[in-house]
Length: 622
Image (cartoon, rainbow, N blue to C red; front, side, top):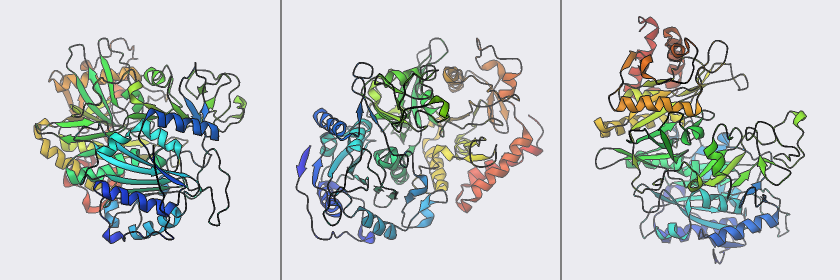
């Protein structure tokens, strides 16, 4: 780390909203750091270099402060446990804002704030927010440093937990700073936990293991690329390179520059024949995204290599192919539900050098969460630091408990996962959690129908969720909480990318691992058996499999899906691919309401697809 003197003028002056532009170059960076330091009044400013020594010093500091618990060095070497407060445990969708100059640019699915008012309120929140603390300056790259697809950001924070976590999740440090030349654009992100250690009168305030503030705000300014986050120390609220930059701001950059920033995993699937298949896939929460990204295929001879588990950036190349990279350097995964039976690759990844947050602590100094093993061990301490009683009916780990770990530790990681040129995409998959209606797999007839598949991704509410059972929560391209601008314009951008790619565009497929039978049980076994769907997709791309043309897409012929060894009950395959015209006609009504939120901005190509779907109920059965 490099320390600098903290400027402390009596009252910071900042440019007006109208005069602000997206920052470029080193001089703008240094001026911005001084501006934020003057506003937040830290004790010192440290520029992070991303070194191992820096990491070890910060970890030791947090252990001494009680912010981290070191885990047993033999059972979980190099690993630590953090516990947040109960009020700071998850993403803050209700307090996340897009502060575009025009409200209509944010779209109806985002919370919009006037940028002038938002900036005024943020400056009031941040004034003096770092008194008594250190202000860390973290230059970082999203994407390999030498990639043309990579973008540079700089985050300011007063949280050492955020520094250490960001060093795992990004390419953070001196090498990223060196990439900022005289005119290099960079994304400014400022974060504070909102708990100064000295009050306005100079009196000390005691610190706590997890500092935060009841008042929380996350604001994005698309025109100036700025991100401001106040009051939370948790996850994507504080690791601003992740969802804030890599999706919300990056989606705006992608629209302006001709590429896509999407909430998608990225894999390479290789059949016994040896021709690899590169797939990006968008799934909303609770739809098996991480399990798919680290799949152990059940089909003999098949392999799946992980390229990314959460975010994918895609750009047309000079040859007309859509090339993709994973801009992240680590995994920020949900721990509960992850186990040796569901995702052995993830379990192996987190055996060492991992920061765990809000999971249970075992009596022998290891961690545990629901799903890690069939039965909980004796003597657990829960995620809030209390002795856990299994009979109490409360989970030992918070349902959103997390692990932060380097992607390089994953046994499934592809050896070239940081290739600066990325990989050429062969297929894009979208899907949600649907008990009914949606078949196991369907292929779009063309790019426009594929965009319609993505724009209408939905998952059904369960009895535990707010709203009537069976009601659809529509989550277009799994980007509902993450798009930085109006989704209707995003769909238009997808269509434009498809026009640019032409015949070289990846084929688009819709999947559903969660269809249920009349008895409520899942019809498809999922997990490694999903490789059977990938195998069919690979044969479709090679022109080796026929399809059945239906009103909702191209379905496999029953004989073309390899189900050998599955021992499916008679009729299950037919149920997996059943198309109920009346049910689809009813769903079209809900989708029309969804499109109505966007007014006349919905592309005509998607309206036409919806009109065709609305007519399914009156068409003869296929």
